[in-house]
Length: 123
Image (cartoon, rainbow, N blue to C red; front, side):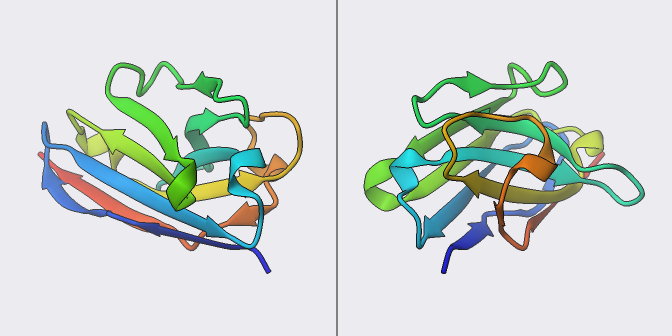
């Protein structure tokens, strides 16, 4: 059984940073495509970073330069370093994984999801 679990969310002031972590078990972590997504109330779930099994990364323009994705295969852990946070970054942040040989920016493509961790940024 695949389990995905996020941690590291919290409440911060604008300009501060947070580092989210995601552990994945029950599947070969190093062979997974992995992604971070977020969803604000009333909004669609959107990608904020993803990384393929060959370590190719994608960061959308709206967080590029502020968010960094990385992984530690020895710890089966995915990270999202978020710097210079803005109030519009407030959302529930999800980690997603999939064992297929590809990478997608679309949430529906991923088979395994965590429960999410809340990030709240106040001005």
